[in-house]
Length: 97
Image 1 (cartoon, rainbow, N blue to C red):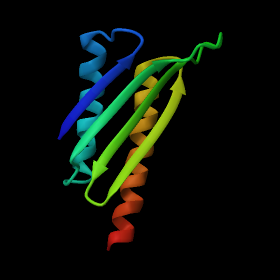
Image 2: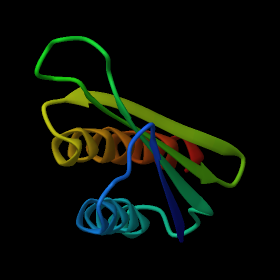
Image 3: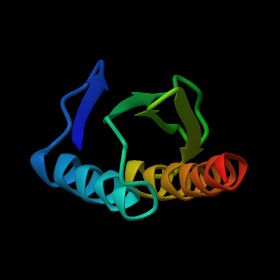
């Protein structure tokens, strides 16, 4: 699966990008026909600690799955988004069978 990571209005370090790629690639265990994954990292302008936003979009045949989470760190937001996508994949597979 091809994973594309885009950081909006800041430069993400290579460790963060690798972490996100590994997490998103693990979703291929649950669905073997994922075409690509796109991840958008953004900083919210609010003064709250939880200002890191991770949006993950997965393209699978016939459907696009999307999850957006806001947390204290990009790693935590990615974890929550990936687990939400995993639940969406499970729902999609049960509907298919």
